[in-house]
Length: 202
Ligand code: FES
Image (cartoon, rainbow, N blue to C red; front, side):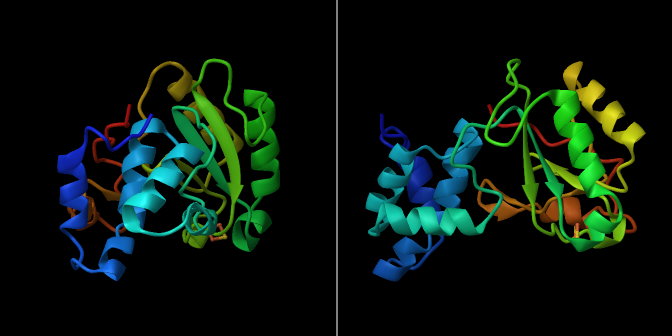
């Protein structure tokens, strides 16, 4: 079932941000992917095809763009998608042990969603928070930094019990057409732990 059939207003809004040219249409790729992922939690093959038709390219090209960014998912994710940075600073600070602890506690592996649909996990490359290693990102919300075993378990219990994720630092991802500059402007010393958590899609 096509995703955008009954979402003409959404499409018009996204395409209006770019020049009305062939190239301009193709520039809408990432916000279109974001729109689908925010709604479904991932971008299915059918929507890659749909988006490629909308912007005048191929599904292969859509897929290749998605594969470049760890923020896009081609398979279903849990309500909380936990990405553990495995690059040098985090590795030196213990991200391997953190990853083992995470996957053993949740009894899951990459590509799976836990039976309660709450969690999925992924190892990723540097998330740009090397000074607070080891760190992880939860969904598109933000970072948990300087993650100890205790902090990890407290976080997992909190989320399992229906709590919202309150990041140490938010991710300035694109949602609803703009960067979350409001959150960035409110940062104090680079940390936003006191801000309200963002609403989860779905
Ligand atoms: S190495 Fe982990 S955030 Fe950069």
